Length: 94
Image 1 (spheres, rainbow, N blue to C red):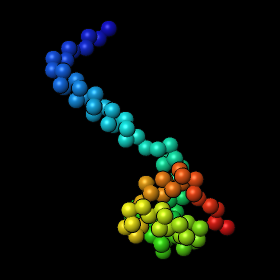
Image 2: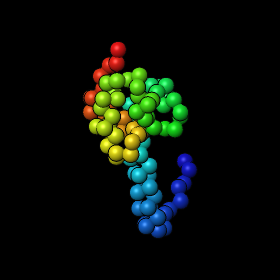
Image 3: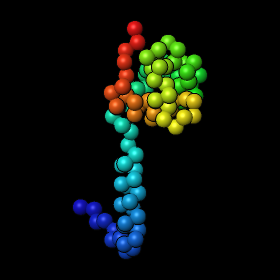
């Protein structure tokens, strides 16, 4: 059995625990992987955001643009879109 070194500085141990918890807290949501394919097809300029122009083929999403764009920067981030999806707002475009 491997002998682990003794931690001599309690502050180091606490810092290590905090960093570990912070890394765990930043794990991606379960649905982020599910959004990737549809996001990639819609984000035609590949800038990581959806604009009104990119959403023209999706009128039901375009109608909700202002509600989805919660930071009011004129574009929808993947996080804003994921929040909208998680809230159960999406509708199907025909």
